[in-house]
Length: 273
Image (cartoon, rainbow, N blue to C red; front, side, top):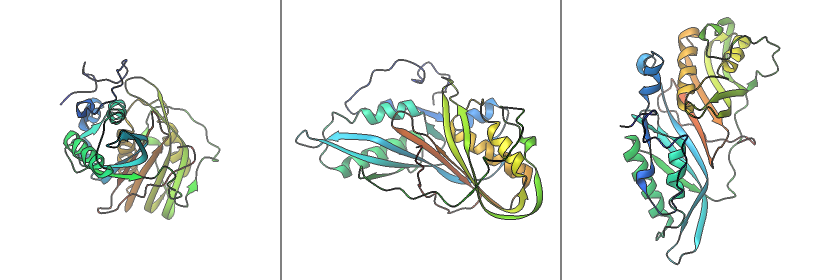
């Protein structure tokens, strides 16, 4: 399968926007690739989860040539061997724009089949009305008002330390920023963390989140790296790391990783998305 550095990778290059259906536009990237590049192993820490993509520019033509528009939710299991590069995903969705389909169910099934084939897993697609209301985020203690000194903008697991006491609940920060590994463009987001067990030092946790600010990696890898570093440094009884990234190109990417098998992520949405 192609690499992020492959000459066939569409990321960072001028692209022809096809408006007729073409499944070949999808560009899979092996999830292990980024870990290997950093001298790490993805299997070092066990986790479950999925990547939730929300599409806001979904359209095709009905049998009479009339446009249909809707929103879409794509759920890709974290256990798949490959993830989908975001620009290729956008190009793929655009390819439906001038293609006629008999029903919405045919479009949805086509997308599920193509994405499942590209990722190597069972991808689920859900269409929503353009005025669909998304759930609110869970109540969480926001760390952003903590008055801390920042000394690094590259991931530093040594910032993560246990503290006195026990904790069971959500904390969050809206200071998450990482960069695209090829174009260097900023990816903005909010990070929600649920854990149970010994309390984490919150100043150190916030400093760690900020330390991703200059880190170049895919959304999915940033969340998995955060999960790994927290799990190894603080050894919680239970841990969930969930990023809600701001949309770009009509898509937002929301990786969800948890230590709890069988937990389904709620697709809530913030105003900034």
